[in-house]
Amino acid sequence: MENRQEILLTGAGGQGLILASIVLAEAAVNDNKNVVQTQSYGPEARGGASMAGVIIDIDTIEYPKVTRPNVLLCMNQASFNKYLPRVEPSCTIIVDSSFVSGSYSEEYKVQAFPITRTAKEKIGREVVANMLALGVINAATGLINKHIFRESVFRMAPKGSGELNQQAFDMGYQLYEEGQGQGIGISAQTPQ
Amino acid sequence: MPETKPVLMQGNEACAVGAISAGVRFYAGYPITPSTEVAEQMAARLPDIGGVFIQMEDEIASMAAVIGASIGGMRTLTATSGPGFSLKQENLGYAIMAEIPCVVVNVQRMGPSTGVPTAPAQGDVMQARWGTHGDHPIIVFSPASVYETYYLTIAAVNLSQKLRQPVILLLDEVIGHMREKVEIPEAGKLIVEKSSDKVPSDWKPYDEKGLTPLVPFGFGHYYHVTGLFHDQYGFPTGDPPQVERALDRLHNKLEKYRDEIVLTNYIGHKEPRVAIVTYGCVVRSARAVVKKAYWQNRLPVGLLSLQTIWPFPDREIEALAKQVDVILVPEMNRGQLVGEVERYARGEAKVIPVNRYDGEMISPDQISEALGRWLS
Image (tube, rainbow over all chains, first blue to last red; front, side, top):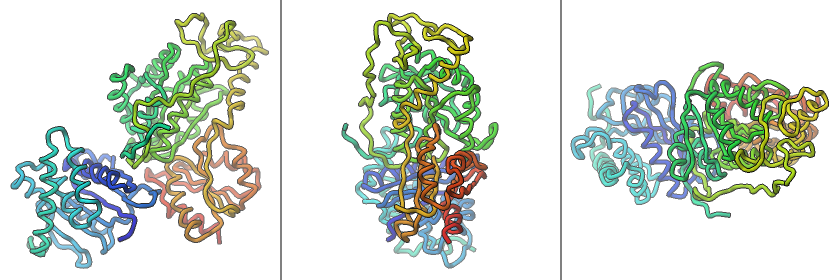
């Protein structure tokens, strides 16, 4: 694994991606890594598209913007269409199949999970989809020590919702492990 | 040194935390993107520690409130961005003239006018220098990381008090909004440079013999505060020798403490052929370039980053220009500080601007490309 890991979280405003990026960055600090977090503040951040970037490295991080993502999360169709062509085939791509469908070039390794649907149906709260997504990402990549990450999710959650958010994070791990068994992907789930 | 602990912190937040550590207990401002988090943090933190936070009706009033609180003996700070910085200029000049300490934070965004509120730029470099009228001195710091924002805010507050001189902290949207890991002392510990100067019994507010500490109103000394040229007691004067002395006084105090004010940092080759000179968030891109070019490929390149941009680091540029063939000056504007670099390079080195002004951060690739052209 390269030292420098760039993670791009994309989707719609209101899906909690910026908070997710801050939780991820906080977890990286607690895991003794260097980290920089940035986010798009453009007019698109108000209601439309939302994007947040996190860079994790052992070395000091100079240029703070994500240019070559190692991990891409797409939580809606628009972000999938927009960011997929911008990443390299080696990038780990995770999409929320609750919102994303359609075909894509075969050179990409896309892994699809019903992130928001699982949050709604299994936990009963759609708002924790962001923490569930973090669980999936960490299960897929092992970026951060799992125990430290769980602690950070608890600490960064709004008062009284720490356990709920941890539950979502754990559900992400579970979803990833189950999905692996079924060879889950967009093309397997949705008609082209 | 107080104990430190690694935390994730935003640039604007580091500014607020630094201000509080430096003893700032008064904030007056009017929120504006991308500086709003400074106000937000001050509003959240100041009431708990006996400080005062006021959201004023506009930036003009904010600056006036800060000056008033400062004469009252409080350490003060206000934060704004481009359009608000324009509004603060008149009262900023008053503070310079009346020698009232205060720190003004300008988190630069794309201008002119309302411009692109959320896009980064470095268009206010000359405004920070000459925004208020008259032949005045100014101190301007330009941090390149969350940690630098923290310590330069502390330096700004302490220097401002010591020299009775407004200090500007010129941030940009990238540094203000990004979060990164920093190790700083836990909040609540004061990092305040104590003034060793005792107030003499024959204290005068603008003593001809030199700098005297500011005695706040209500502490036993009566004096006059005005934006007019004044004598050593603060009363207006139009007497040419006194006017000249008063203006010299404003400039001399900065010259006397120049070594404490002018902060720069050089990394790279010992005998560089091409050097990069830059400030603010562009330092991040430039460091990425120098890391690769020098540490990996051993090319004769170096980077002089300027934490202080005004007073301009003239001697540092003069010395650098004698060493190198080419100085690259990347900036996120159409070329502002490059003029100063050229002036002090005095023809000893070729000075080349590298500019970007589309509202995006300058990339290492853009600097690399320019570097490659001048190395070959």
